[in-house]
Image 1: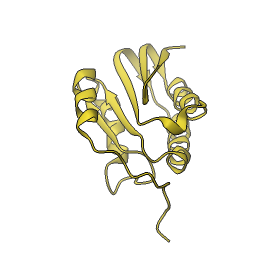
Image 2: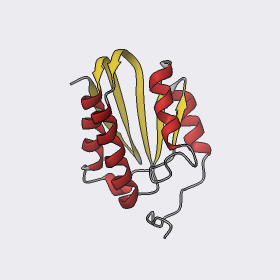
Image 3: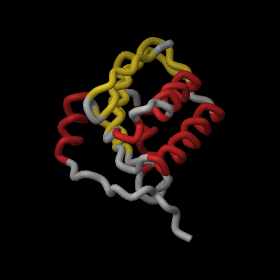
Length: 135
């Protein structure tokens, strides 16, 4: 396992290191979504600063997106933060920019965990209503 989850008040800090596979990243997404405290989460902080290499395949990305879409139905009040200097991992935040993939929780990329946490604490609470697609 190349990641560790640290549960905090209102969120979870996921630290990744070494050689990260897409399946490990997908496993971490699913592990958080299945946690009994998931409905109380307000943030997920993904820290990729100690990742040496990564392989993201289409099957892994599909698992991640499917899990995140389902998670949004359950808890639309989560903000997801990615901390990395790697441009490929940083680009994962672009997947959920407005108009790209609106059925997932808001995601934003940062260079440091301090910047990510400071940004999160400046944000207003997200809507309490569950996500409902436009019909």
